[in-house]
Image 1 (cartoon, protein in one colour):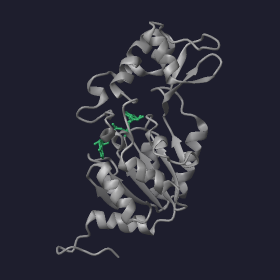
Image 2 (cartoon, protein in one colour):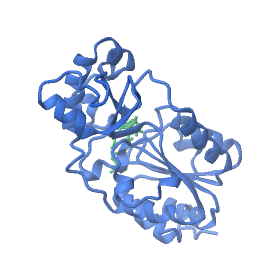
Image 3 (cartoon, protein in one colour):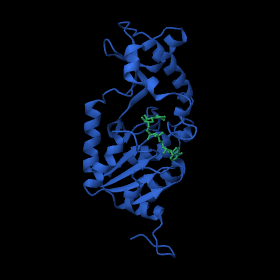
Image 4 (cartoon, helix red, strand yellow):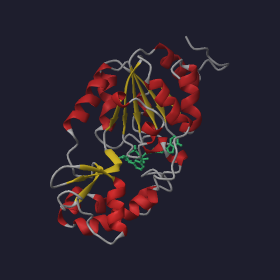
Length: 261
Ligand code: NAD
């Protein structure tokens, strides 16, 4: 049992550490808040991406009807995210180390920035549920290319950037609003949610589906829930512990004290 403080209430940090220590099947869910300390803005925070761009401009239908116009804005969005400059921080690194433990089932990230992989996260325990901004895919032949291929074309004024193989338009490697999520990633994430005995949420507002549904799936099967997020989420009232600090401070400490990293 965690120690109570003088008022008898259990400190959320102690409670969270205890839950991590006891857990045998941890599922990590992460979002844009994991990477803000690496300099990548989130979507819904005070200086988030949606203070500068309109979500509707990045819908799949918009891409299909006007790929050139879509890419003009997309190139600006990629500049705003500035992924090339970003480096993983202590939370990415500790989550990558923790994932090597047999006590961690897997990690479903909504992030498209690739920083967990840069930090050495094992690929077989990571689901990038919204895809990756580091790649692009041809809508004609289906080939994948590094994002740099699209960037070079855009910088040369070619909108939309063409596939080097078949010249059809390239699409970002991310899942666009209104686009179907890949079935295999969804199934894997749902399976982990059903098996987990602890869900650890890091830096997500938990309002974007399907990730927003996963804590509920796990809670229905008796899992515990720990949320590490700066702002309130719709699941806070169902959580066993809510930690309000910055991910780069809270997460490494939690995983170290919990015996995972
Ligand atoms: P979100 O923007 O909806 O929520 C981010 C949450 O993180 C907010 O509640 C905020 O309070 C919290 N937060 C911000 N900085 C934090 C910090 N340092 N420590 C702890 N918490 C912090 O993001 P979401 O839930 O991931 O969902 C929305 C979408 O954002 C996803 O589709 C994702 O693909 C996309 N996105 C990803 C990136 C990225 O890859 N880095 C960047 C922007 C948006």
